[in-house]
Length: 256
Image: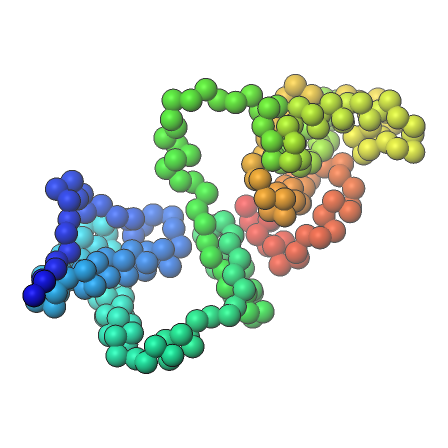
């Protein structure tokens, strides 16, 4: 008879997401579930008590409240036992058919969006923008921003507070050349950038273009473009640039 137990490497640090970190509560619940799964599903029943005691110690050392720990350990064990005893068809029938959407987590704001979307059968998944890989960089040379592709960018006017926000899937340098050359066309073909240059006699800061966001997915990039247009007060973008903006996100824009 083969007997198994939860194996932990000698380098096992017992460090997990701290309870007071700026993450959604669902992520912290997932930490508890993950540890319980390892303690129970990877081990023989004779080791469950000791393993769950270790789980509690780990969570306490990562600042999780005792009430939170006990509540979600009991809940997860109950779910595991149900899956073991329930008919497979009953478990499969619980699979949600809701639509899911991922949005950045902003404390006290994302929860409001989640409640609003729940009314329409849209389930919300939160993502965290400030990750460790954004702070700890590999030793690679940084690519010139003008050589980047799949970006949302902002061009400031040198003579006033106006700015233009756009997006492109191509190299940013290519798109900027198009902006600069557009003024040579007939007046009826002017872009909003060219109109501002001609009507006001102003010039844009072509060398100081800001890359606001990078996204290869077209729909996500267009949504990010609309977000930044809504967020900046003095954009010269035309109204059609944000006509597809979901109004449910308006509160999110004003609180970030």
